[in-house]
Length: 343
Image (cartoon, rainbow, N blue to C red; front, side, top):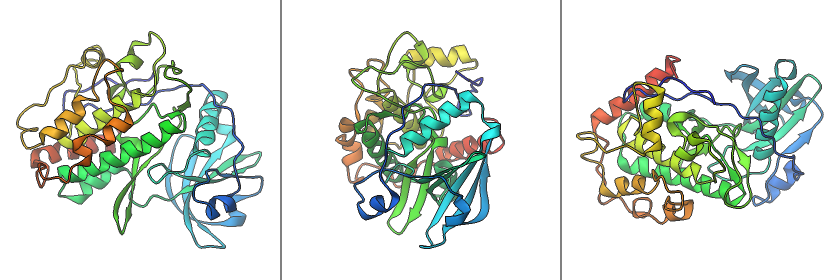
């Protein structure tokens, strides 16, 4: 598992990890069937050129072997994001991760999960036509907003839990939930959260069918770090607890001057709610986190329990109007570190 050296609070920043298990492909319905029946999930498999159906626009981003460009459906005018992957730059291990991500994305359709519409496959490249998310990464958007309230943080977490609840009901554990993998889209009804990056996700059956150590150390559950046997989908709930903590105060609950210290903190669930950063945060929010950052997986909340928790169900009467300004600055610093490429 790839790790970075953790930094003192509030500057601990995650890194990526690798995993190579594969998921068998699943037959999916046509794009037209999906469009006509919103309850049907799936993505179209095509052998032609994506350029024949989509007019390509500006570049949106790029990775080690991929480029993402804006696209527009020539027939409907719908805007999309198109991810181009050059096969000659992808080795077999990366191909396994990529294939699993495609297989999983082709299976899912939920408001809070990034959607894959079509796959164009040629000898030279793969072209993935995906939902265009206009807000970018969630944490960047929060920083750009200026003011930021606990109520807004609660709404973000509720959408995240709803998305994970859907994935778990589909037999999918994400295994790498972290701020970098949460996108947002601005609509007339407000901010919509999108769970992205399924490269480390895996299908499961039963309660303990996952065993590969993966994920980002800062957000990984203790049972993942211990690498002493199988674990279950509850690892995603631990990650939600860490994300919630960061959203509310701007720094992670676990930190250390070395990787060993960081791991020791996580393995013992050694965290607190320091003052003054948590003074104005509601007791309900702290209680919610306290039910997620739990060592005993049988005691850790599942998605249904999270959705029934008073913090996610409340109307905000006990929540402060805005997150303490010092907390917001911590979050700004966290994002600045990522922008500087120190994650």
